Length: 189
Image (cartoon, rainbow, N blue to C red; front, side):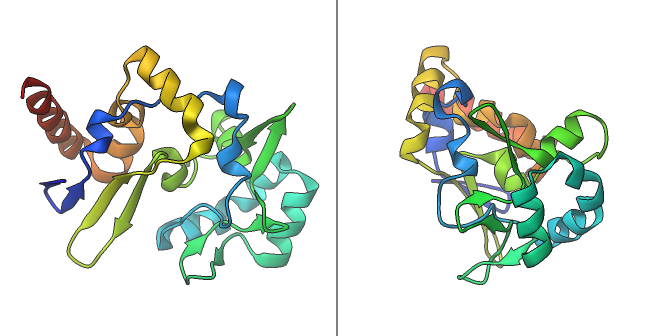
């Protein structure tokens, strides 16, 4: 672990390798698990605002779940998250054949909205836990991502480079440039 500004960072994000491999996993992270995607307070307001524009991209099951539960929910642990369909799929998930994709991201890709998706999804496999004085930035190892780890190793892409855009979105460009310096120093040692 090391500190960068007000973040405590696991060295795994510099040392582990990762590149999403949708052809292998079929977007399992959007349909597996026991909770929706983590959200922050600002994102709950964004979801409320963009829902009418995202709705046409969603499946009828997702629309029904959102209209019954809301555009976001408080999970069993009290954290804010996306609603689920039958306690499984994220309500915002859509399918391209058998591959799960994000309906929010599809609306973004088509220029309908200017918000890509929840930052927690964009950051994955990094998970950020906010505390009063700092944020913990950790690599989340999940067996459904074994193919992503293999592809990352084959392509020699460390986690922090794979999620560069998301890290900049969450922490800013200057923070990311400092992270790159730390990674370069680590390589030298």
